[in-house]
Structures are given as structure tokens and as C-alpha cells.
Length: 355
Image (tube, rainbow, N blue to C red; front, top):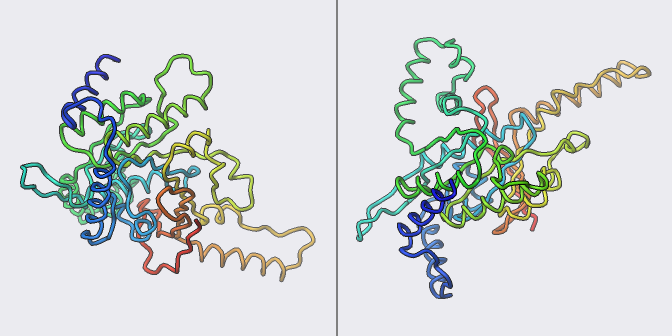
């Protein structure tokens, strides 16, 4: 396998640069590239210099997902991190547009061609989830055939449109970082590639022999993913689990220290985002009457709980906890649990940036 990967690397280098090592780059050349990116952002409707996520307020916070960035998207189970990742991948692919340049090559104007590595779900399960999100029909109903004729016709119509979007799914389980890199290089060379999504980081293997600990293996994985992002000059989104320490706190909003094997993940990532839904925790914390509590006090406490549930209903937070290029802080999105679908809130209050 090692010789195949070396050959893939050589082919990719020859196809993209014509030489295997770029070496030093003149400052003037780097400045021209930076100005080209700024000009592209200025001319684009959304004023983004990176790949759009398709979410207004998140793109406003990040300025899009930048080439060569490693983006970690983390959350506890049932928070919706896979749903958000599939939403972002789908939005980027749906927005994809390119145009021919004078030299015969093609220039990407918006969106991206997406490689989605689904190490937990099969390609068919992922496609069903995307179809459910777009058609707004429960994925459970799609799987069990519990749909009427109108819903089925809608699914067929939506699937025809979706089939044109440039999303490439790899559902190989227990994939190594080196094999993932090989497949990305091949897709980049053959079809073009603008965004890589990995669900999820802890299911990758480092590929090394005799790793002393899982922490060291995760360090090798995150370094490999950052190297991939730089080599292909595309953003790489890797989903990550969080430790159970979140559940033990009163405030269950995630923190950087909650990342499992957090040192290397936090260090190598350019952006770290957490998905948090207060509604999930509130619904499981309905107050019960205390032995010495009278009826009015209990009703008052229960009423405050109900009000909190109503305020948190269908609201999700994407907490940007680290960003090398810009501000950090929370972004609120609408979350529809029936279709595991995120969307922009109709109204968003003023955002506070913490730098």
C-alpha cells in the first residue's frame, strides 16, 4: 500500500505543480494570492473568501471555510453534529458554480465539489438523510415506506435535482489517514475537489505500527488531516466526539477542554466549533416536586422550566470556540428535529465577538 500512496503523491504533484517540492515562495507571489482571494470575496455576493456553509450568520462569523484550514466540528451525541456537517456539505455542493478561463481551465465561482467520508453510516443511509432534509419528509417514513403518493412524487422530484450536485461519498469503515489522503488526491485530480468532510475523526486510524497510546494516534491523525488541507488547498471538516465531562456540569455548553484527546485536536485545528442544543437537556430535566415543597412553589418552578423549554425550542447554537482568522462566539440556528435539518433563524440578535 505504501508504494501506491507514494505513486499517487507523485502523480498529484506532477498534475498540479509540475514538480515535487515547491520550496520557498516569494513574498510578492504570496501577496498576489492574498489580493486575489480578497478580490474574489469582494466580487462574490456573500463577501466570503472561503467555501460557503450556506448559513448566513455562520458564514458571517467565519467568512466562509478557508482553503487549507482544518475545521473541527464537535458535539455530544444527539446534538446534531452529523446533521450540521451534511447540511454544510450539501449547501456547498448546491452552490457550486464554475466558469471557463481564457487559458482553457475552469475557475470555481462559488460553492465546492465535496468529498464526504462517512465512516459511521453507509452511503445509502447518508443519501436518505440528505433526501429527508431536502424533501422535508421524515427519514423514518422514507425507510419504512410510510409515505403517501404526493410525498413520494416530491421525493422523486427532489432526488432528480440533488443527483446533479457534486457530492462524492466514501463509506469505507476504519479508513486510515494515508488511504483517505490517497483517495482525496485521486478525486482532486480526476474531478476537482473543494471541500472534505470526515464523519468522524475518532473512527479514523493513524496507520502507524505500535502507537504508544490513543492520544498519540489522534495526534498523528490531526497532523495528517491538517497536512491534507494544506496540500490540496481545501478546507477539511472533521467531526469529533466530546468527553462525558460535559454531562457533569450544570452549564453543558462545550469547552475546548472537552475535546477527547483534546491537546492535539485543539492545537492542529484552525477552527473549532461546537454544536449545542439546550432543548435536548431541558426536556430531560423536568422538575419533580420536592418532599417539603408546597404546591405553589412547585408550580412556579415547573412554570419556569416550561418557559425555558419554549425559549429553547428548535434553537441550536454553533459555538465558534477557536478561529485563527477572526472572532469567536456563538451563532444561533434553527433546528428541525423531524428532518434533522438546520437553517437560518428568521431573526438574529446582535452578535458579540470575543477576541
